[in-house]
Image 1 (cartoon, rainbow over the protein chains, first blue to last red):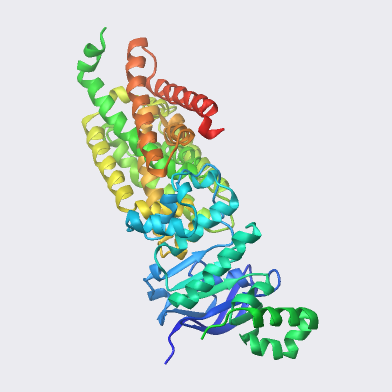
Image 2 (image 1 turned 135 degrees about the horizontal axis):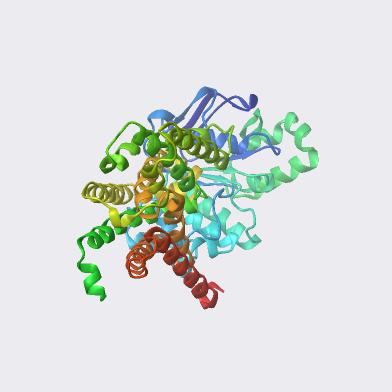
Length: 248
Length: 275
C-alpha cells in the first residue's frame, strides 16, 4: 500500500475572515513529484504554510508521514525552501556554513557540510556572511540548508525567482535527480507551468479550492483546463511534459 | 591614584564583577533583539521597571531587595508586550509604546502618592553601579548563568528564529516558546541593567554592544562573543574613568560603549572586506 507523505482533509484557512483556502483535500504519495500552480492569490503559499504548521487552518486536518501535524516531530525529514526570506537583511551576521548547519540543528559533520556546499557549488562562499551575497547565491545557500538533513520530502515555494537561466536549469535538474535517484518526494510551487510540465508528474491547480488534481496526461485531456489555460498554453505545457524525463 | 589601588577597593571589585555580568547578559540578548528589530523593547521595559520600582517602594520593600521584587512585574510587562505584538492588531513599536507609557504613568502617580517625588525612586533613574550590594551581585551571577546556559542550550532555535521565524517554524522550532524565553530573559536583563546605567539608559546596554559587534562580524558566534567583549570593556573602562573623574558611572559606561561603536564604524569604513 503506498505511503502518503502528505495528506490534507477539508483544509480551510481564513485570513481576516476571508476564506483563502476552501476544503482542500489531497494526498501526496512517497516518491511523487507534484507541481502546485494557480494564479496570484490562489492560496499556493498559504497551503504550503498550513502543511508546515506555520499557519493554522480554521478547519480540516493535515497529516505528515501518516501522523497528525500536531504530533509530528520528525522535521529533519522535511526540507523547505521559502519564496523569499522575510527577515533576511544585509546585516545578518550568519555565514553560509552556519546557515547550512541550521538545517540539521548543528548536528552535521564538517565532511557533510562540505559535500552539500560542493553539490550547490558554493563551497568557496562557506565563510561569507549570507547577507553579503547576491540573491542567487543566497538562494543556493538556502537550498543547501534544505538539503542538509537529507530530507525525504522537499518543498519549494517559487524557488528560482531571480536565478539566472543556467542556475535555474541546474536547480530543476537537481530536483529531478533527487526525485528519480533517491526517491525524494518533491512539491514544487511555481507560476511557471512550463517548468511544471517539464519536471513534475502530478499537478495540483489551485484557486482557493482544488481546480485540478491529477497527472499531466489527465491535465492534457481536461477540457476544464483548456478553458483555464487556453488551448495553445495547454498544448505547450503538455508538449514540454512529453519531452521531459519520466520515471520508470 | 594607580589602577592597582582603584581595583583594590572592594566596592569597585563588586561593581566591576556585577556590572560585567549584567552587561554580558544584555549584550548577548541584545544581538537577538537588534537583529529582530526589537531593540526598543529595552526602552519599553526600562519604563515598565520605573513603574514596578515605584510599586515596590510604595509597598515598603527594603532597598536591598528592590531589584528582586521588581522582577515579576517587569516580566509581566514583557509578556504583555509579547502578547500585544502577536495580537496582530498592534504593531510591535506601538505595543512597546503602550506598556512604556503605562510604566511611566504608574511611576509618576505612585511617586506622587508616596509623598512627592521620592528620592529612592529617582535614584533608580540614573543608577549607580558603585553601590551594588551583595544580593544584587549574587542575583547577577545567577542571572548570567541562567542566560548563558539558556543561550547555549537553545542556540540553534534562537539562531533559527532570529534568521527567519517562518523558516524556524517549518523546521519544527517552537517559536512561541523561544520568543517567550527571549522576552522573559530580556525583562530580567532590563531590571538588572537599571543598577548599572539607570532606567534612562537601560536600552544602551542592549543595543550598543551588539551594534558595535555587528560592524565587525565575521560569523554569528563571533558576533555574540564580540558583543560581550565590548560590553564588558565598556563597563570596566566606564567604572574606572568615572571613579577617577568623579562623574556618574552609568553615563560614563554608555559613553564608552558609544566610543567603541564609533571605532567599529571607522574600522568598517576602512576595511577592504566590507567595501
